[in-house]
Length: 89
Image 1 (cartoon, rainbow, N blue to C red):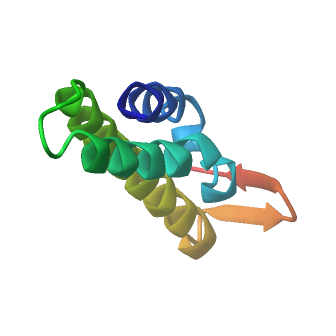
Image 2: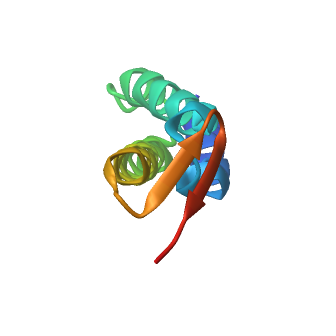
């Protein structure tokens, strides 16, 4: 679970600067990393560091995607038409 969370969080970096709807790998990375943390709590299984890294990366990626989406929809410089966005800076 920890490795899956880490990998999914890293994959979530790619769509990070698009809209929050496309951030499914980041969401799954956070979920799997939390499950990995729970599984490695007692020390019997390894991978706790990967789970922590996946959790941190996943949360950062999801927050950045939400902030970019918020900026695009609230900015006067960006015009949205469905899923098409045109920003003039």
